[in-house]
Amino acid sequence: MKKIFISYSHNDKDYLDELLKHLSPLKREGLIGSWIDRQIKPGKDWKNEINDNLINCDIAILLVSPDFISSDFCYNIEYKTALRLHREGKIILVPIIIRPCNWKKLELSKIQALPTDGKAVSTWKNIDQAWLDVSEGIEQLCSKELISNDNKKIEINIGTKFIVCELPRGFIILSDIIKNKSSNWSVLASYYNWDGKWINSTHYHSSYYDFWKTEEGLFTQCIKLGIPKGDIGFAENAISLMLKIRDEKNKNTLEYLVDIFNSETCQISIQEGKYLVDKTNLSTELIELQNTGDIRDLYFKVDFMIEETNLGFIELDKIRIDSIIRETQLLFFNKVGKNHPAYELISNHYDKLSNKKYNQFEWLIVLRNIIEDAYQYF
Image (cartoon, rainbow, N blue to C red; front, side):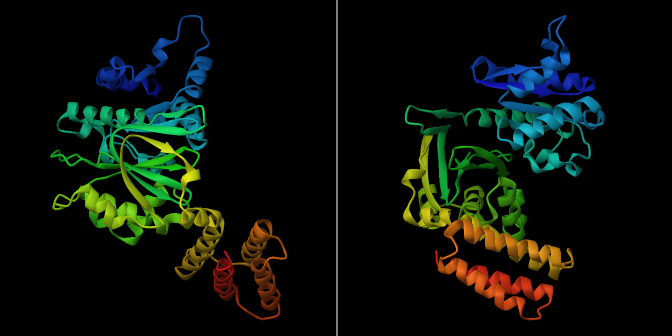
């Protein structure tokens, strides 16, 4: 059973009552137990009670509205505590947008919200349909319970047919993959690291197609999922597969699509019920890529700095350049030691560069090339 903590403004108590009503089937099935401040007993320290229940919950729900955002206690205490716990991987934070407000300006916008697309409950033509969408979203999260067995293996319970896309430093689970006629049907992608820790989730609906198919759209969704930047290129097949699954014109079977998008660097399979997390069974290709992930991340960082400089988003200075060079030397030294050819290559190039008069932008380009050359040793 998942323990759910609900944070709300007392001005939104009617919305709270509706949420509890629509979560009652999950409660009756033993999937969840909810806690709200109404349950604080007389004589108890209400601040301590709220804090204890928030810290010990599995899922924290925020009923987001103008009143919630303007409430010092809701925003500065409950929201910020829940956000910290979410970042630490201790709880799952779920914003439910109940009334229109400027929530997308907050850091909260980086977290997948309910109902679908973050469309405020009060704006739906059919309010019960909005709450059903919310309830189904909560149910999906509850099905992702992590269970450790005696061998320290981890199982992720999905309950229905799903697709696993194995990447070097984690895996994506695609659920809600069975085609249905509902206009609200969307495929859910959840990214986990190889320790079985859930990182983040995102939904894909066919209305997002024009953006998701672009390079920017792919990058944005991978960042939202929490995929390391050095692995984003390998995740492209998983995102493309999501688009095909949700494509109403697609007549191909799931098996056919999986066969098309499966690759050595994104290993895709169809499973049902549970997924056993076992990084000891990774292919040689994925293990090798896992071991060099930090180098790819560094390359991406330098490449991104070059792009931002080109676009005028950042200005280079000696401190920034020296910092990234030291980071490069330290990474290769810690990874392979000073006698390894890769580290020697980095050091020799640095010595040569020090005797040449490059401007700072040229330094970055040369450094990116050096990292790429050194990567070949792995």
